[in-house]
Length: 78
Image (cartoon, rainbow, N blue to C red; front, top):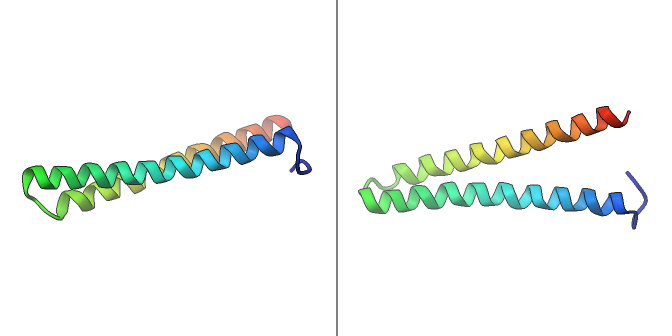
């Protein structure tokens, strides 16, 4: 990694922080969607749990896609 203060360091920090925000957002959106579907259909807690599962799965998809993109960038640089 580049020394602190280098532009590439700030870019890497920005990418990592956006990854964290995207993972949390995916989980919250899945949980919220399941919760409101449960309230609408009266199936509590099943759709909340299913929505949470989909949100967590989406967060892992985001994580794996980001890791693959980082791996491709490292291979291109080498």
